[in-house]
Image (cartoon, rainbow, N blue to C red; front, top):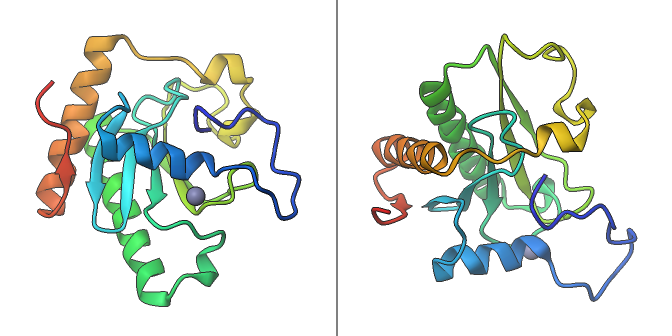
Length: 170
Ligand SMILES: [Zn+2]
């Protein structure tokens, strides 16, 4: 879940409510989002807010579009390739038992991929991440750990995708 996904929902129909993900992307562009990891050619990558799954990232499509099937096929594939690169970076950084990739958008209908590492130590590892109570999964990492993790993920993304823009040294 993203920080702004409060659970209120958009009501399903046309709405004038501003898009939370577009707002988040603006903060990434402005350098004012602390959990920014990298800007890739088709996406922004951020550390997600459920760090019970240490390394969990969200890949935000740069362009506001509600559904993958409404993207030109090349763009959808490029976004998927970037999501897989994020999965590879998380795998290298955290050595999980398994990765989960999810493209939901029920609360924020702007295409984004959730990439979750799952660990042996998780007693609920066979269940979807969302089954775990929000208060348990939405934990923050200690600041030095968070920054080290962001640095590792960003470095790995830079290695895989040379065009990646990552946060300057913090
Ligand atoms: Zn949007």
